[in-house]
Length: 175
Picture (tube, rainbow, N blue to C red):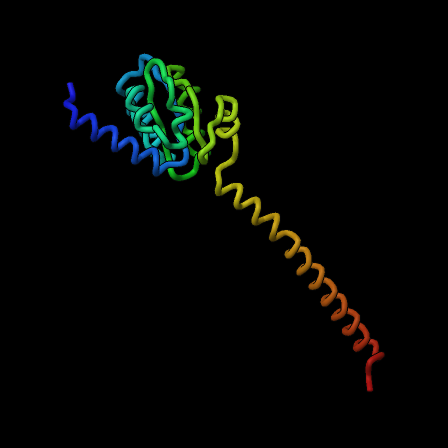
């Protein structure tokens, strides 16, 4: 059993983690083997997040006064918290993919950019393309009109050059 000092350190560490991260997913697990837990933690790390099994009362106390308080209040059963300061879509995807393969993991709640979200919103978030792909699509949309303009201008210049070349060949532009 942990002494009071160790419990306070755990509480302080969880509170710091929750303050530093704008995205938190609260999950429940039942009958998860050590190997499955290792794979889950590896998937979460790969998505740029961290995963931590917490006691319900510890989570509630650590979240007091923070945006995460809404999702870490009145928890029941086994609870784990996955959080990230990075891309929430990547973490949601990693957790959802793992949950599909291992029904022992279920979502309880989520907090994205300071807003509490429900299970349906977590599924929608997990189905979104990654941030890098969205940026690439946006840049393509911004760049496409500029490319069309350059192509049109090149076409006008090319056509003008062809007309001048034909005129010179036919001696229409001679002095």
